[in-house]
Image (cartoon, rainbow, N blue to C red; front, side, top):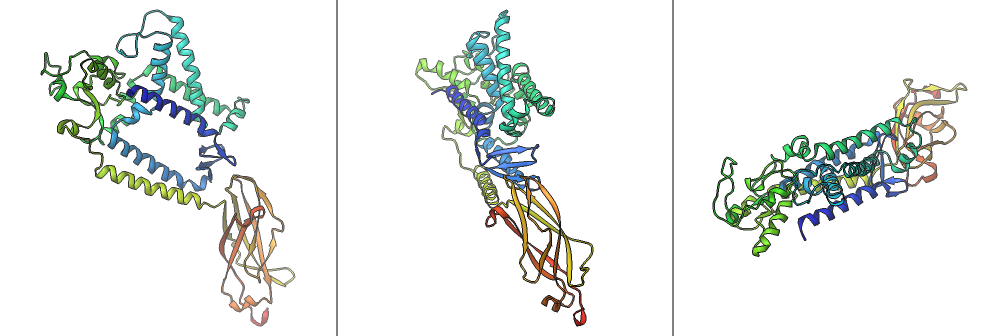
Length: 443
C-alpha cells in the first residue's frame, strides 16, 4: 500500500472521530467539552466547573510533551498525516479541483498551473468546499458548545450572535488557509514548523533522499550539480512534481517538508521499472549513512513517554476521585450570640454550596455532634448543575449543654453536607469551630 493511500485512510479515521466524538455522551456528559457558556470542563465524561480547571494543566502537559515526543521520534509526521490544514488541502485541491472538476491535470503533478477558463467548475469546487468548511467550523465549535445546544442556538440568531460570529470566523479562516494561503501556511504561518526544527536529531525519522544510492544532486550550498555524481537517480523530477510544498527533497531536509511522503511514492513508481526500491524513504539520517536500522529507542524517546504516562495516570486518578459538590464555610464576624430567650448559644456561618455534578440535586447538611443543632436553614434546597448558593447557617446548643466545659475554647465540629437524593455518594465533610463562652455558674 502506498503512503498516499495510508494517509487517506488516516484522514478518513480522523474525520470520522472528530465528527462523532462530540455526540458521544454518558448521562449528558461528553468525552471532552470546554463550555464557556456553562462554565464547565467535561473530560472523560466527568464534569468540572470553573473552580476545578486543574485538569487543563494535565491536558496541556500531555499535549506539549506529546508534540515533543512525536516530533523527536518522527519529525513533522503530524503535518502530513493529521493536520487539518493538510486534510483541507487534499480535499480541495486533490479531490475537488483535480479528481472531480479537472482543474488540474493530475495529483501527481502539483507544479503545473491550473487549467485556464473553466469558471463554472472553479465556482462549483469553491462552493462545495465552502459547505465543507462550514461543517468543519461547526464541528470545531461542538467541542466548546455541545451539538445539542448548538442546533438550538442557531435557530435564534439574534439571541446567540456570538455563536454565529465564531462560526463565521472559523469558516473564513479555514477557507482562507486552504483555498488562498495554501501550502504557504505550512512554511510561513504555522508556528510548529519553527518549533520542530529545534527538536530533530540525526535519529529522527524523516523523509530522506538516499544520496549514496541515488547520487549527489545538490552541493553543500544547495546548488544543483550539472551532471552530478552517477547513481540510480535518473533525474525524472517525479519527486519534485508531486511535492505539495514545492521543494526538491534531494536537496536535503527542509522546513517546508511536511513528511507526506508523496515524493517517496512517486520515486517508488519510477524505480519499479528497474525493480529497485525507492530512493526516498521514511528513515533517519544516521540510518542512511550507516545503512542500518533506525534507532527508535534513545533517551528522549523513553523519557517523554514516561512523563506523559505519569501525567495521564495523575489525570485519570484525580478525575475518578472528583467530588460532585463544593462546600466553603466562613464564620460570621460575631463569635457567638445568646438567643433572645436566653436558652441557647448560637454561632452563625456563611456556607457556600456548589453543585458541580451534571444533574440537579437537593442539598442539606448535618452536624456530627449531638450537642449542636441546626436552627437555620430549616429545609433542604435545590441547586441546578453548576449552580452555587450561599446560605446563612445558624447552629445552636443549649445554654446548659455539656460543651460549656470547654471553658470558652472553640469546639471543633464536623459539618457534613450532602445531596438528599444521593446521600451515600454525594457528600462532603468540613471542619469548623463552635464558640461557647466561658460562663461561670452556668450563666
